Image (cartoon, rainbow, N blue to C red):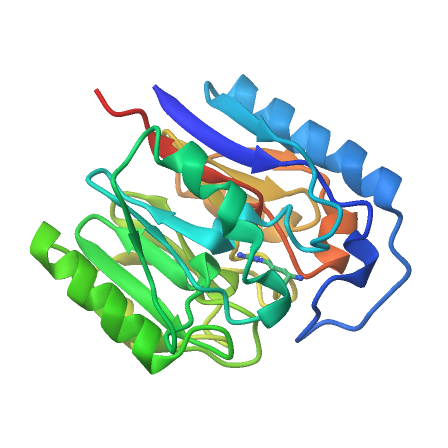
Length: 256
Ligand code: CIR
């Protein structure tokens, strides 16, 4: 069974961190409705959704992906790069502890889950403004004993590594080559986004298909042409908070 942990949208979402997108008026009620439809899509694709209550004190707390990395064997609580987000994980940890042994990134390390792309035993980590060298080194030391290879990857002009590249199948990645070099991913089949849809690389893989924002029709067609099933959701208000589809959930297999 696939579990997805989500958190309802904070009433203060409009006070979110922004790094690479400009601040535009944001309708929290619409964001909450869109988040509800995203949760519905997760359920329709077979996930058991664990919905955590909103934490209004933390504007970005809907973006639960950033506070933890969940692998088959273990989960790692991160130390988010934005100081405003450091305490978001405190209420997620006890929920994850029901499913996995917990490890943790310690100061001075910083790491956002949005920077962590796992493909099989390969774990690529964005060397971004949010994830520093100490965080990446700690993650490597924590996960090498479990057989993972952890590799830092430079990103540019985007918030996280998974803004630029995500896995859409076991051997296939969807990539925006303007934001990350293709070379580290040479072992995989690469599908490039449509260059006019620069935010389109962030997709959430569920089973044999992906969830993708509905505003990237040309990239969606490239995925469909490659035989990838696509479920679309409208997350326009969450995109104004520099979020998209991976960031709103922690998805993992239930321990057997
Ligand atoms: C932030 O800047 O931290 C939030 N406004 C957006 C975080 C999005 N997280 C993600 O894509 N993993």
